[in-house]
Image (cartoon, helix red, strand yellow):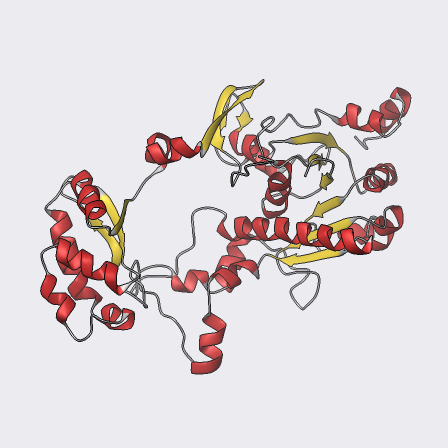
Amino acid sequence: MAGLRVLDLATLFAGPLAATLLGDFGAEVIKVEHPGRPDPSRGHGPAKDGVGLWWKLLGRNKRTVTLDLSTPGGRDVLLRLAAGADVVVENFRPGTLERWGLGWPELSAANPRLVLARVTGFGQLGPYARRPGFGTLAEAMSGFAALTGEPDGPPTLPPFGLADSIAALTAAYAVLTALAGRARTGCGQVVDLAIIEPILTVLGPQPLWYDQLGYVQPRTGNRSPNNAPRNTYRSADDRWLAVSASATSVAERVVRLVGRPELAAEPWFGTGAGRAAHAHVLDEAVGSWIARHKAEEVVCAFEGAQAAVAQVYDVRDVMTDPQFAALDTVTEVDDPELGPLRMQNVLFRLSGTPGGIRWAGRPHGADTDAVLAELGLTEAEITALRKDGVL
């Protein structure tokens, strides 16, 4: 994506992460933040020496400028930036850009080839469009929380930005789709992405099941309503392991491995639904065997039987796992503020045009003067804008 210029006007988290994904493969991303109210991710979560660590990940490969878009001077500078950009990513509440004179009519007039990606909780239309929207609400409204947790427990929300992250991946895909359209038509367009929608898609055929059968999938904890054995089990050395047997042949290998081959002869064993209905029997068989062995022994035995198993990792395990190390999934980045940092690498490996992390998140407004000078503003003009509170 070298040669593409992306203006990231968004905050927390879907919009900025979409811009990060584009920057990871070469797009020039300019992060625009309010002079007095930086992106909240700079203060989100733990910090080191007063520097927010989440921002180091979310802000990587981005140049940072400050600009108050609500001021006439900020509006004018943004339109000049948009004139030379390919993509603008924003997540203001619908109507905000329009109130500032930066809606689609003004942006497309400045640059008819521009793609405007609007990432909001509920989209640009509908009765909820102007409500504040966050990923937590999407996790609740999509049905995700209703499916997650134990059957006799409450709906469970994830302890991280799941809906935002899914929306970010979708937004990056949507931007590339719009750019592919521009390559044919010569014209830009608006991407309207509601965070409540992508997470609903990844939940699978829930609406289809309900439409055709009236079926509402219940909470089943770690069990699957479609297959078994599928659960987490504790080993003799107090480690947890996840087992998945999504095919009958794999389920047969598992019950043979744990010393219960007679289960494979049961009339219900031959289908995923039948095994799911007898998950308690399979869980007892698998769980009791794993409980008698150490985690490393379990993994070796399952690998030998060509059955699927994995230890349940926390981040300490991720950082030392040889497979992640071979893939360079967590890579080292040198940072002027904090020194060497280890963070997630780019999402995938390309053989011909690989992406990379050129730098971690930069200080607030670090590139303001350089970017504005590239626009043709003089030092005196930049000083005047800063004096007026625009920068």
